[in-house]
Length: 390
Image (tube, rainbow, N blue to C red; front, side):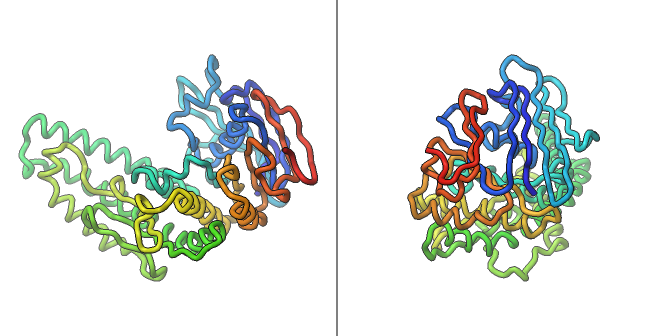
């Protein structure tokens, strides 16, 4: 799978942009603040329905306009499709594939990409919500129906929390909250489904994380991954070392249901749901220690990059539409020469790799064959080169 054409209207700093793209590596080069990242951000949005830089779509719409449009032409073998997303300030966003309307959350069915950027250092050093978001976005990319499961879980969670707040305000005793039982059951069903999907995903990622870390760092380090389930207690962590040990849905469901009953009084006192996948975490260990808090900057960077490269490998194995488009946003400036070359080795066989850099010379020669120069929200030059741009 690769993008052959990107068209933008009123997206970020682009009033209009038309960019022809080729398979293989494509380098977007230009000074900081000129709009390189905006191009790849748009491509990533069409795959994940989110930005890697901001949490609200409003920031993606050019100042003074009411809507932004992202349009991609995507090729896989002999099949071409046109994907269009319209981001609106005051109405729901819209999406179309080959001019037919679809729900925005269905976009991952049609296009797959994996983007790595400096912000992804938060996967290792940031709060649990960042890692949950990473897992859930990848779960949806592997199985787009989970967009509905996650949306339903979040809706049930909000309604359950509203009920808990109402009960606390009216001082209803815990034993009298029979209406909560209905929401508990729905929370358990949806939450269990999400926890099992995350477990299956992390199991699939595990060997690729280890291989990718070694490939990027050039050193043998022991990486381990696990999940911390709030239904098992705040300190309980299950490391996933055995790929043949699945999470049992029935046992998880019963454990979830039991813990909700045990915590009901505490939840009524605090007016918030205290257990469930919304309070779980992805655990990352490096050489027997938690990466968060113990890994150096270089080790954290390598671990975050390994997570994204592993994601691309898992999607590559899952997909019937070929490789995901791999996006490396402002990555090479952070790496020494050895890591740059090793990263080039790790990504060279993906069907399309999109790269941004302020200085073309930071990127190895073999990833600079096609270079697109950007300045002040405009494409100023597109060229195929041997040796790349400086």
